[in-house]
Image (cartoon, rainbow, N blue to C red):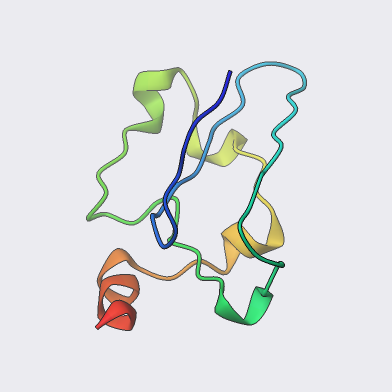
Length: 79
């Protein structure tokens, strides 16, 4: 299965199984200084983790996800 994600398109994924493989095919080298991360729990996104049967405190997050910014700040950074 494949999913096309255009450049500068915010995206993320939630793994509900014990393991998952997620491979990226990209059009350029990795540039962490150009990367932004939107907070998984931003109120503006209004994601109901409980509707997936997951308590927010059960989520296992990367350091990058924990340092995410608000959607408003992300949108402002694109201007």
